[in-house]
Image (cartoon, rainbow, N blue to C red; front, side):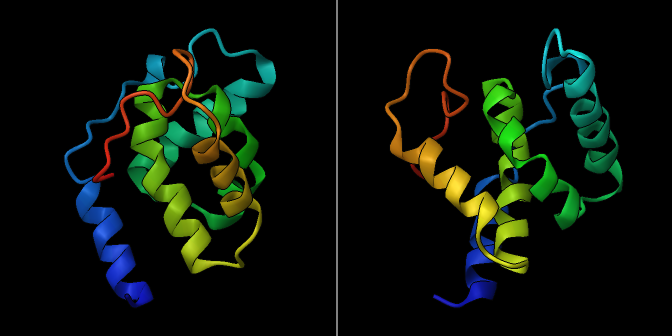
Length: 112
């Protein structure tokens, strides 16, 4: 599979995921988390910066399952388009851990 094919597959798999709503990105976000929320709200409308997603990669774990599912393609594409490493390692951690009820992976389907 080529990189272009993988990108198309990621986009197709998540194409029907609805925006979780501004209040459902990180409910009860503290001051530091508000920066992540504000960036993701703006980026969902204007486009994502690979650099910013790398900076905020460790905040994936505090997203609600709905917002994790919505923003996951942006992180996956940033990893594919940029220098592989930080985001991929973090995602590998999340996908290798057992899924608890509080896991941001809750609701992720096999096709996604």
